[in-house]
Amino acid sequence: SLNNAARLRPAGGDAAGCVAAEGRAVGSRRSGEVAAGGPSVIGSPTETAIFRACADVLGGISEVSRLRSDTGVVFEIPFNSENKWMLTIHPTDGMPGINEPYVAMIKGAPERVLALCNGDLSGARRRAAMRALEAQMAQGRRVLCAASRSITSAEAPAGGRFEGSSAEDCNFPLSGFTFLGFFCIEDPPKPGVADAVARARAAGVSVVMVTGDHPATARAIAGRLGILEDGGGCREGDMEAQSFESFSIIEGSQLDGMLPPDGDFAAAGASSPEARAFWRDAVVRTRVFARVSPLHKQVIVQAYQHFGANGLGDIVVMTGDGVNDAPALKQAEVGIAMGIRGTDVAKDAADIILLDDDFASAVVGIEQGRLASENLQKSIMYTLCSKLPQVAPAFGEVLGIPEALSSKQVLLIDIGTDIWTAVAYAAQPPERSLMSRAPRHPRAEKMANWRVFLYSYGYIGVMQTAFCWLMFFLVTPGIHGFLKNHRELPSGRDYTAEDELTHRRSTTVYYWTLVLGQIAAAICTTTKAQPVGGTSGYGLPNRLLNATLVVEAFFSLLVMGLPPLQALFDMAPLPLHSLILPGLALVGIFQIEEMRKKGSWFFTRV
Image (cartoon, rainbow, N blue to C red; front, side):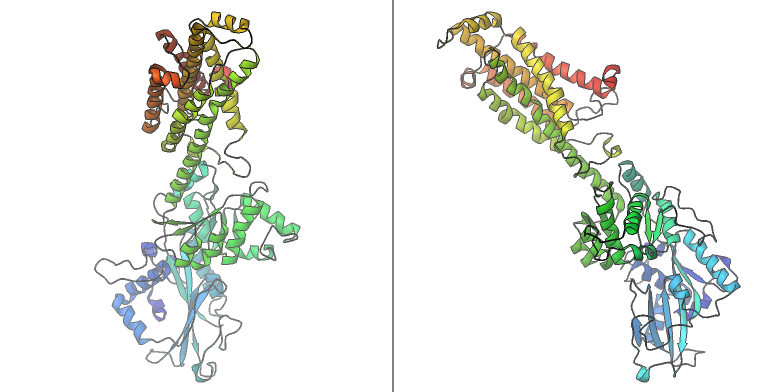
């Protein structure tokens, strides 16, 4: 079909005979998709686009199929990442205007194919071709170059037994090709990808493009998606002048001298000081790696894992769909394969398969993963809050204060109420600022870190302890007389019946205050920064958590009110005011935490 390339229209209106077939949107069609009213075309998106472009020229898919069947293939060198081109050799029987026995067709990366063309592409014609090439790549199009060459009887191997896999080992000439033109394929990003990239960047995720495309094409696509901060602009005709001093774009050829000899940066002496300095800059500043090989992809992942995060190592997520992506997918902490166009090899190497092949879904997955981690941390924070007021009565006894909370009551709080509330955090919706915070690096900051302990033990726990003791001393009926009798009680003597009742009431008040304090802690720990109340507040959207809090309060009242349960858990009935006033713990802790979240004058300065 490339013999008919002269019938294609010139690219960009260039007058130098430079031609192109524009696949337009067809380049993004999935393999096997059936065109409206036409047969299916099975193959990669690039090959499908070229096939349909040729069909438009020749008069339909049936004409292309007839031409292909009439023109046999005697030898083929498939595309590979080293050559960056593919070649087929055909017998010329029946081809008009060709007297030689064979014709070779080649298509692939423009810079590789153009290097094999002879002197017919020189001077003004070469400049015109390069202008057309730059114009197409500046628009983000994937460009393939096509060329052909007749093979004479003297050049053909004996018996037509062609051999070889590259320009160095072929048994026939692989130079002197005649330039035919360019195939320019539009493979636009899916709707929503640019927004997904912006969301990822706002969440502290660095999005890096690693592609086999030409740097100019990669620059245009990356600029369109917001991966490059400068928009990826490239003036037509200025492709060669685009230096890589900013490190924002690096070409695969620049990586060849920077690869670790054993493929492992962690090995002693694995790379030179210059190479290590190069990679330290690259992982910070580079946003596009273009014209890379499968080995390059794996090494790039290793570089981020070794040099990223100031030497701590980045957590790398790699997406890919081809066989060549498998090593990098395996190397990354999380490998994501495309479910629709991904190969079986890529899917086997990946940890996750993206069913819709949409990058935006990966960002949603990041949000869900971050939410799960956040909710688990909040559950830990809530659970730890009650530990300080639970242990405080033991220190109180050292100071001569009667036991304020029995071991049965501690177990009642931990097992009877707290455990169910802690589980309910799994259903907590995200805060407004979830995807605008820097990610937590698991090697630098553990889930249960000093901030969690400070919040639970040194902040909420302190307030709970203060309210528990306050209610213990102020709300318990007859507490002052009981304390006096307790101090004067001779060693080995038991409490009187009245003192025993007061003691049980005091532990009941302490227990009830702590339960209400834990309800306040549960509400407060639903958010880290967003206020719960107010017109723009987070509210109480977790119905499961709300239900557990209601059940927790009801269950505690049931234990304090039913005589059999009172006797079992060392409790006693309380007057109405002793049930209502501990509610100050709930209101007080909640209001103080709301003041912190709203950035009040006092807490902002503290």
